Amino acid sequence: MATIDPSRPPASEPPLRRAAGEKGLKTGALGLASSVVIGLASTAPAYSIAATLGIIVAGVGLQSPIVMVLAFIPMFLIAYGYKELNEDTPDCGTTFTWGSRTFGPMTGWMGGWAIIVADVIVMANLAQIAGQYGFQLIGAHGLAEDTFWTTFAGVVWIVLMTWICYVGIELSANLQKVLLTIEVVVLIALGLTALWKVYLGNAPDGSVHIGWSWFNPFEIDSIDALTKGVLAAVFIYWGWDTAVSINEETADTKHTPGRAAVISTVLLLLIYVLISTSALSFAGAAETGNGLANPDNSGDVLSSLGSSVFGTEGFGWFMAKLLVFMVLTSSAASTQTTILPTARTTLSMAAHRAVPQNFARVHSRNLVPTWSTVGMGIASVAFYVAITRVSTNVLTDSIGSIGLAIAFYYGITGFACVWFHRRVLTRSRRDLITKGIMPGLGGALLAYFFIDACIVYSDKDYGTTYWTLPFAPHWQLGGVFLTGIGALLLGAVLMLVYRFMQPAFFRGETLPRAVAEREPPRTPDAPVGSVGPTTGSPGAGGTAGS
View 1 (spheres, helix red, strand yellow):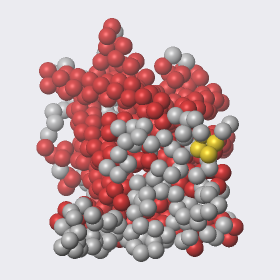
View 2 (cartoon, rainbow, N blue to C red):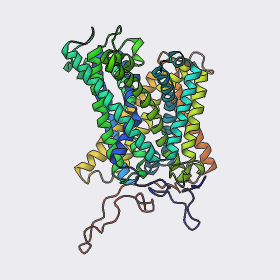
View 3 (cartoon, helix red, strand yellow):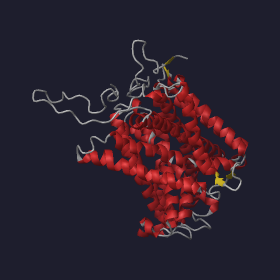
View 4 (cartoon, rainbow, N blue to C red):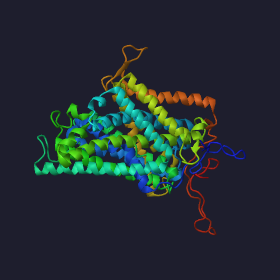
């Protein structure tokens, strides 16, 4: 297998950081539409709604739509942070690169590790859902409930999606366009059909017309219920940053990825508000019957909702089956697009000498990361098989722990945007808002969610498992908290070990710190357009591509 290794500069060159376009990836392969599609597909809208809406309704009832809106706010603010940082430094390492340049190598390394942790853990759940729904689709309900066969099918999905990512970024994007288009069309059809039946009086008992109180957060019983609802809803927006992690493969590396991230979050908001509102109107929030808060339905609201909305005969039967198929393809598509950002994060980390350099290898023909892509697939399979052999309850709790990793690296990105641009925030009102206030507020909100989640998740009654600490028998902590914090602490240990083995990155030699600078004033004789780069400090490596 022929590969190129961008982490090894020619002998005549010093070991400078590898900027956009220098890692061997296929530049100019994706446009704005493809980037938006990948950003949307990474969130798995159908699967996210199926797995999360019932939980949110059980917590906040008819106010679920406003929770969807509130969860969107920090995501939208952080998306602007990604957009602004990408315009300065379009590097596929995203949080790793920006955190390292702004706060130093240790912060950047931990940000990159959080991306890897979140993606590997979610791969296990996506694979599990893909396996279960695959069997349900063909009517093999016994196999869908069998741990061995669902695990086997999930592993097959991971291997298949890894292969597609290995073949090339364009094949990945084209496949996502087809799957996402059908997924969104079916979801919109579900929402509109549900509302149509409600207002024609053809909905089942428990249906209710939409009220303005659904969008009033003060109607929620308690701050604790509101926070838990927002924490659950934040997860369903996660994934749009994949559109930025493929920045070095887009036609306009500086602008397209950030725009795609912002557009993706807005489109997700519209989809989620439509589905949550229409589903709640059609089925109600009761804990019995068709109610979305019914424990029998809350783990997968779309399967039961599809048959009720579309019917069980003729074309309605076909649409209900198509909805189940969409949840399957949604999780499978997200499996594929989850591999993309992790492979590119480890590629960037290796190119900057933060992890073993083999992970910086790029296929000479396919122009995709080799070790990083295959390594992501292997790590996901290993984690998935190991966790299911322990307990499916542990798998469930591990998924809940992802919120800690998400809040951690999104928060780093928001604060990095503010601090990196601190010298230019007063340059214009736009700079102050988009480079300072928006990402800073987003980072602050996510920092709050991280702290609050640690408190909520540490309760032994939260989730399905808890652990008794051997050195403190009377101290019992929730499995969700231990999994999330434990994964981050494992990264800290690995970072210290690698710092001892390969100190160059941690001394700032391969990825120097930098800060955005004001434009130097033009001299009277200097022609317009002759001003040099506007970012980077002297000796700090300048802007991306310098």
